[in-house]
Amino acid sequence: MMKRQNLKHKHITSFQIIILGFLSVIILGSLLLMLPFATRDGKGAVFLDALFTATSAVCVTGLVIHDTATYWSIFGQGVILFLIQIGGMGIVTIAVSVAAVSGRKIGLMQRSTMQEAVSAHHVGGIVRLTKFILKTSVCIELIGAALLLPSFIRDFGILKGVWYCLFHSVSAFCNAGFDLIGIKKPFSSLTSYSAQPFVNFTVMALIIIGGIGFLTWEDIKNNKFHFRKYRMQSKVILTVTGILIILPTLYFFFLEYQDLPIGERVLSSLFQSVTPRTAGFNTTNLSSLTETGQMLVIALMLIGGSPGSTAGGMKTTTIAVLFSSALSVFCKKEHAQFFKRRIPDDTIKSAATIFLMYIVLFIGGGMIISRLENIPLIPSLFETASAIGTVGLSLGITPKLGIVSQLILIVLMFFGRVGGLTLIFAAMTGAGSNCSKYPQEKITVG
Image (cartoon, rainbow, N blue to C red; front, top):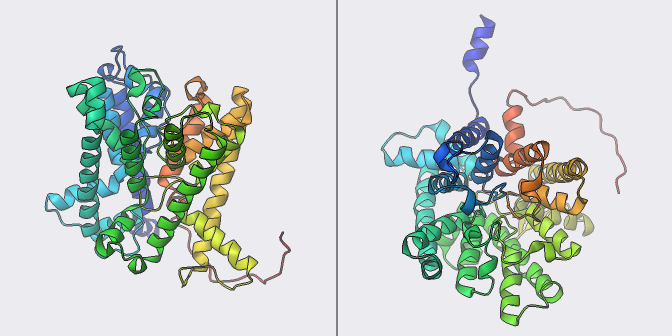
């Protein structure tokens, strides 16, 4: 009797729903990509290739084993675009939006799950926020496609140009990094557009808008240019995003791209500072960067975008909280703070946990791939940072990796998109809090 009662009281948590949702869409996408008409040769993809591509699309990463334009058919490309859209917007976001549009009642469980999916602070108003996210996303993607239209119609004709505009607009906004420019040269990304300002600025704008987070959009919509009225989180996100664009741009401009003409040098420097967070497009050959430049890109990929956005990575707020905590120690202050607001200790603990998990998986995965594939450590770390940061940039080793290395990247991509704490909370759902405390004793650190 007791066992039956316990089973009745057990229910699926919000974290488990998010994980199961992503897994379900990845499996569905893999099966669709295995169909004969999903590839240009009419044979369909083998399971591991389909699984890798579907995971990369749903987790909006952009790492690919096969060039998207030359290997996949129009149907296969459509499946990839569908997976990117669902992964970028969030499975729960789209599900709740469809339910709301169809007039179905949204229960407390669905609202709670939605709150976790978009990193909202409160359950109240979550359905309204979901509708706002859906409408705004569609509008931004259509505007982005319209802005890309002249360049792509000129290069690919009307029908293909329209398809390319839509595909790249969604891919950029969702921070996915999948491209179809491989039709010119396989795995070339946007290198053929490195000197075209309109394409560069449109793609960069889509990446930044998609990466700052849905709650920041809402703040901008409600408070316009009154920065003081923004939530503290939005202020932190916008400030850190600005810093992470400006400083790397200066580095790339003065120390990496000195051989380029001044106009292309500015565009390449700016683009390469934006795309690692976590878009995955590139307009220059990343293998030509110095090891210092590659390590800077790795750091940017690990940081990623912002909470509740289409981007992955540790998140800008995680790094900001850790810096603020370190600064409070240096200045001998009791609490970390932003904009005259105190940061809770629980938030600092969560940030430190996330940082440790990402670093361990990033370095551990890179070392294993380096040893298995017998390749230098820097390219291996670049690959694992790209996977766990859901970026998609690569130094060209992805198609050459063995089965075990591909499986490592699949796990890292899933971890990076779903989030480490989400996975832990889903697994530890049965653990209760312990009110008892052990005796305290000091330990020396540093």
